[in-house]
Image 1 (cartoon, rainbow, N blue to C red):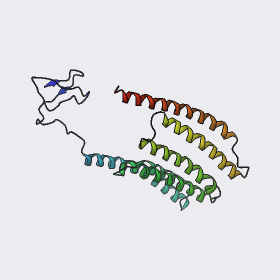
Image 2 (image 1 turned 90 degrees about the vertical axis):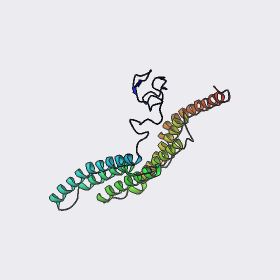
Image 3 (image 1 turned 90 degrees about the horizontal axis):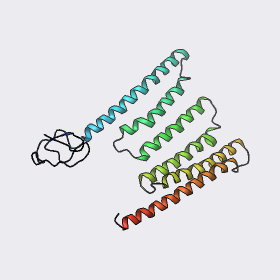
Length: 235
C-alpha cells in the first residue's frame, strides 16, 4: 500500500491520484495499475442518486402531510367543515410545492421548479381572499406584487445560469432590479389606494441602488479588461 505524500491517505494500486487532495501518486514499488480492482466506484450510480432524491421528497411529503391531515381532522370534528384548517393546509401545500418538486424532477430546470412555486403562492393568496370573501385586493394588489419580483428574480437567475452576466455584473443587475421594483411597488400601492400614480419616496431608494449598480458595472468592466489582457498575454 502507498500513502499520499501530501495528506497521508492510504492509497490503492488503482489510484493514479489521491482521491482526497488530487496529488499525483509516484511510487516505484507500487506503480499505478489501471486493471486493479478499485475500492469504490468511479462515480455515483445515477439510479441510486435518483432513488435518494425520491426518498428525500417522500420524507418531506410525509412530514408535511401529517400536520395537514391532523389539523383538518381536528377542525372537521369540531366545526363539521374545514374553517381555520384551510389556512394551515394551504400553507403546507405551498411549502411542499417549493421543496419537493426539486427532489422529484428527473431533469431540474429553472422554469420547472420556479414557475410552479410562484403559481402555488398565487393560489394560496387566492384561497385566503376566497375564505375571507374579499377578492378586492387580490387582482390589483397581490397579483402584481407577486409577479413583479418573481419575474425579476427569474430573469436574473436565468442570466446567471446562462453565464450572460457574471462577476460584479451580478450585484449590479440585482441593484438595478431592486431599484426598479421599489418604484413599481410604490406605483401599485398608490393605484390601489386611489391616489396620484407618481413615484415620490421610492426615488430616494432607487437612486442609491442605481449609483451602486454603476460602480459594480465599472468594476466588472475593468475586470473584463484585465481578464482579456491576461488571456492575450497568456498569463
